[in-house]
Image (cartoon, rainbow, N blue to C red):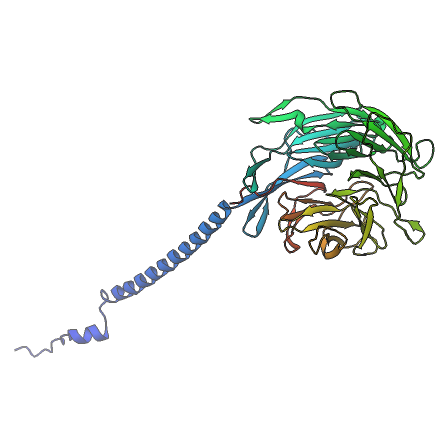
Length: 496
């Protein structure tokens, strides 16, 4: 008989509750890990879905972005014309990639300088001046903007069909070193200072068909003016070209030329004003306005071109003095029957002339007075809300450390069609200029619909956008270099 104590049998129920067998314990742990994995996967899926939804919304918004306008600007460091489209989505503006206009020639920034940039419909004209009296290479360049205006019943849409390109140019030693470029009526006018005359460049002489250029005419030269020509043209039929001389036989001289495109233009008449230093002229409401070394002179334009006048009578609009200096201006802007200009330094003012009156009436509007700043010529625009504004930048001289500003003047606050109640409405801080002589100034452009204004800042290589609805600065874009002369071509591509 065995009297051995047998090993005690394990209680299965106790074993499960107290001490799990090695094969059972990992199974429960694996289930727990599996649950955490499922939870993590759900979180990742949810985050991914949220991200994709956000991106889809962004893509959808981007796909709805429309071209607001096409900007062009002279870049002084490289002597090039650059362009970029401005896109709008909701209240957000974006500037596309800036590029040099196609077929733009390689110029020498050390010796050649782009002067003024003018726009006329879908065309732009750039003046070119050199530092060697026109002997290195001066002239002009005509650019097609690649923008079309498409009427749609009660509004206009804009089509941006073609990339901009240089359509024509004259750059050689025979262009007389032009300083000023103008657009009057349906033509550009380039003032050839050393040739004592100016050229008429008509966009109608060019046509773009299927992306190809067709030329139907040539630029036309008109004699008149000299030294440093400023010019006014009346209805594409008469040119009034000024001489800037302060002394000598050409002091106060104005040449009146008959313009005959396709024929022979000639100087019909020359008159002299008592004052020299003529710099600035414009025609409005049947009157010629000229800016001599002080005040403003006006006289009736010639109507009968078949008879040479025996004499011309002139009238003076006095601007007064600041300190011991007589006030003057150097350029005019025109809007309907009004002529506008700026004058004064210590106390800058906007001058507004109602040219439609038999005796033109002058109204002076006080601008922001900031010591050391100088007002530039006004840019006049009618906004999409119907307001008529004058936009005036104030530049600093040279490298002075001064904050520069933009004044916004409401020309017709009460909406009665008259500007006698014009007032300064708002002032904005803008980027720096880089003024050196005639170059490096701020310039202002406005889209065709009058929604936004754009300002060039040569001092820090930026462009700024201002919403004209509420005068808010909404964007600053870095484009590099020294952006100066600035124009906008076209408006919103689809108003629907």
